[in-house]
Length: 91
Image (cartoon, rainbow, N blue to C red; front, top):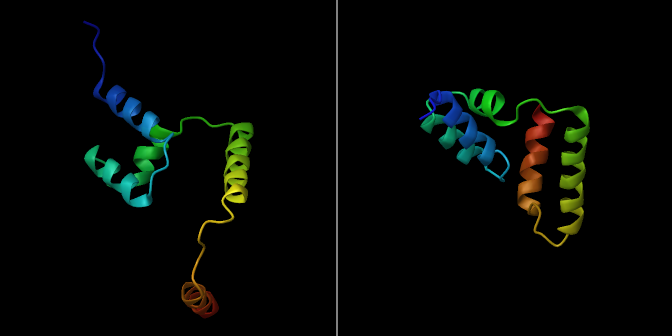
């Protein structure tokens, strides 16, 4: 049987998971389960690999299209907006 380095497994798992929508909490849990304290180590080294500018632009365009199609989705409440305004005004 061919030998695979343990990092090959990590790379496979993270490369698959990085293509799904994950919350920051889920990313942190995955990172900790793979033995990394820093999420950036997990998803920077294993997840996204080398992404060229064209791919990055396409991803952002998809996000924008998704946002435009989900206009009916609930946004922030007035209370949440007021709280954000207060926080931003302090800085």
